[in-house]
Length: 64
Image (cartoon, rainbow, N blue to C red):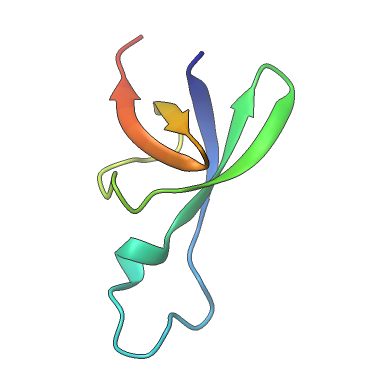
């Protein structure tokens, strides 16, 4: 089941010397159940996108 990204979060502050895009997380909604997931593999992901998640990591965008 694909989840809907409802919000994206950046770490405050990002780890020293790290690319902030690798530390982005998202709140993903699965029809009422929400989960925090890593967006390290999907730097192009935006709110409103649907994503496939495996063990807390968004691994693919899903076309509706």
